Image 1 (cartoon, one colour):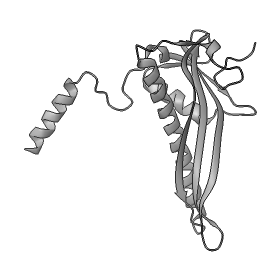
Image 2 (cartoon, one colour):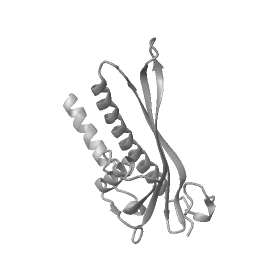
Image 3 (cartoon, rainbow, N blue to C red):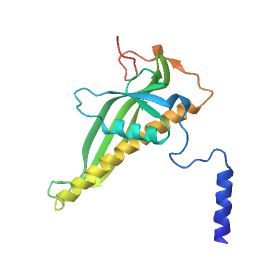
Length: 188
């Protein structure tokens, strides 16, 4: 009986035109060919959120270009901030629990046309710190930081996908973005 129910559910879901497995939904046309512009002063390497977003776009069939020319959209990421806050302290005054918090400002545009209005996405995780297992704590923190970067990339792409997939939304011109804001076009 359970087998028949599982087969029936599978047939119903496969018949549904809007059903896609996580990460398998096609990208909107505006994200098929993108350039990721990261504004990160004094950075030597690519921020992990950029690496995660690039990999996610490519997995979903998009192309990430090395320059703006030929890109159907420019994804601008700025003000990438990683912080660690103490959440709980033991009786000896040592931290027992931390919160890792990462946020990024974003906007998506094509030339002077603003496709996705500027916004901020934040992801955080809490981890326990055991002073007797320092190496394990370091490994857990590194794993959680990687998870946060992947989570941010997923959230960014979901936000872009939701906004760009709405056919009834009229794009806004870049002049609607206040100068100096994270989504403002750079001054020539």
